[in-house]
Length: 201
Image 1 (cartoon, rainbow, N blue to C red):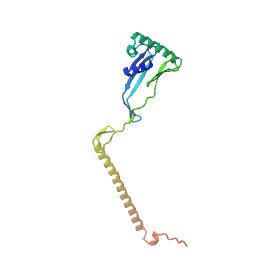
Image 2 (image 1 turned 60 degrees about the vertical axis):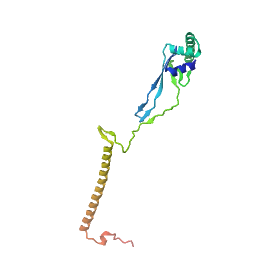
Image 3 (image 1 turned 120 degrees about the vertical axis):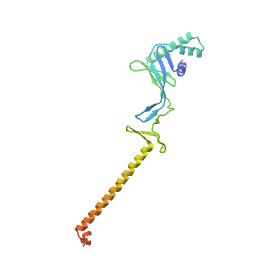
Image 4 (image 1 turned 120 degrees about the horizontal axis):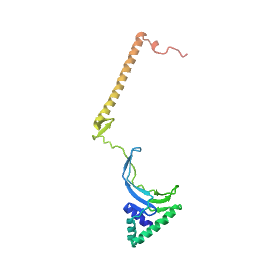
């Protein structure tokens, strides 16, 4: 019976189990995770809640698969669900292959524990693709600018920084030469004034 319920749920994405609850399988589309800067893959989300009711679709499915009349199928399903609920309330589990299990929580309510599935799809990094020779629009602050204009602007900034260093080097050289000229104009030039005059012996 459990295999039939699992098969029905896989095909119809919704299944009501009398005296247990209702399952719904929803597709969760891919979404952007801004914290980790990645795109999460699409996934299936299984929602379960305790709710009384009966699925006529499930009864007809069991009837067709077991080749019995719908009334007998309904009775078998009701008996199975009553026994399964008793097992869960007693602390056991109802395993649904490839989905997970139904079990009781501390409050005494039935809840669904999802089975860890194989991750066929992995999250992918959401880095912007930058093509150096292709023009595209960029948003810098509140101003929109093209990639080529931005590259030119950055190139100009680098040139300006390099030319400033050259300018400072020239200024410091001129100041050093001026300082030397001033020193030697105030003191007469001689070998004694340049070198160290103290004797070792």
